[in-house]
Every structure is written in structure tokens, then in C-alpha cells.
Image 1 (cartoon, rainbow, N blue to C red):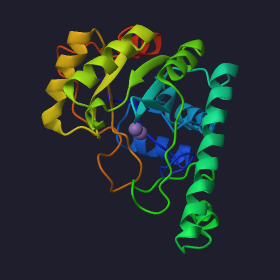
Image 2 (cartoon, protein in one colour):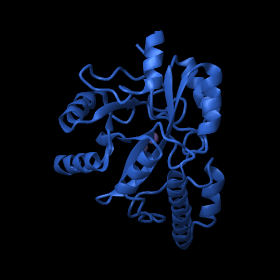
Image 3 (spheres, rainbow, N blue to C red):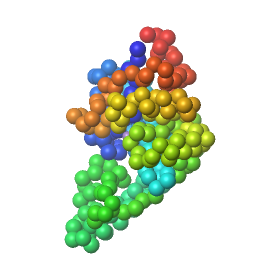
Image 4 (cartoon, rainbow, N blue to C red):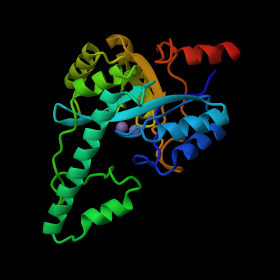
Length: 262
Ligand code: MN
Ligand code: MN
């Protein structure tokens, strides 16, 4: 049985380890197949690929794209993407520019609230200068932000040869009807999978999302959503997908090769 983990962050976005450090941790944890999926950025994939080659791990180039859908932020994971695809890189570049502009607006707001130097403080703190987190609505520094559209995210991923996967569907504040509309819409746009087993789902939710994947004709993905040692679930430490799921890697040639060897 292969150990497969398809969702993980490095310090290129909001994780703490460098890409090679994340790969080293995956290798130490016995991971066979690993995807790095930093937020809106593919800059870590070259380093991770080289480290994975050295460690003998099968590497899947990935990304996690921020989308605004029905007033909420939704995350779309792209797997087996081509990071050099011009449409994908231009789209991700625009998202990062928007994120930096939002950070400046947040800092201006905090300045007005008497918290000076917030932008420089936030930038100095963030490992990646373009990835800056947010505060909650109603507090000083909260700025509404529109990410890109679901249509864009899915089409960039597909244009680069990748598979679009809805990240952690259990984490959004949608009711059942809204979630079903999201799943239908995502499927119609060419989305192929949803995360079922993820560090962002409670184990009691795995069955529910496995059932939804089956009902809506999606393949199932799994990934720890690892950010930092000691936080949440570690890389490669998730249980297997429920047996009736069709995994996202079903037709991936690199996995077929690996399974033939094992
Ligand atoms: Mn996410
Ligand atoms: Mn994530």
C-alpha cells in the first residue's frame, strides 16, 4: 500500500519549512508520493522536485488556488500541473499582486486604528512577502477581498495539464444545498476530485465526503494540509481513503509504475 500525501505547504506560502525540508520530512515519514501545494505560488516546485528525486520519492507538482465563490473563500488544489504554463503563471501572479494590495489596505486601516507600521511589521513577519494572512470581519484591519473566480482557477489548472480538486469541502460555511451547488458547478467546469481524507476534516467527516464524492462522480484525494511540525496532522500520517473511493491517482502513469514495482 503506497503512502500518498497530496496537500502540503512550504515557506513559499504559509508553511514554515523550505520546500526541500518538507520533502525531507515526507521521506522520513515514509511517504512514497508527495505533492507540494503552496497557496497561489509554484516557486517552490523546482526545489521540491530536485529534493524528491534525491530522496527517491515520486513528486507531484501542485498548487492551492484561492477563489471567491458565493461570497466565501474556496480553495482549489491543482495536481500534476505544469508550473511553466503561461496562463497558470499569469493567473497566479495576479492573485499575489491582489494579496499584497489587500495587505496594504489592511495596514492603512490598522494605522487609522492607531496601530502604526502594520504593513512593514506584517511583511517582515511573513516568510513570503506576498502571502500575508488576514484578520476577522468587524476588527480593524479587516478588508473584504475578491479572489479569482472558480472558472478561472479550474481553467488555469486544466490548461496546464493538471487535475482540479476541491480542497477540504468540510471547512466551508455553506449549507448542504450550497455545497451541492458548488459540487455541481465545479464538476460542470471540469473539476475532477474532492478531498475526502484531509487534516482539515475531522475523521468523523471522512465517510460523508467519500459518499458525496461517489454521489457527484468525483475522485477522492487525501493530504495532510501540513504547514508546520507539531501543528495538525503530519505529512504522510493520514489513514487510507475509504475502500469504495476512486482515488485521484487512479490513472496516473507515475503511480501505475510505482505500483507495478511494489
Ligand atoms: Mn486550504
Ligand atoms: Mn492548504
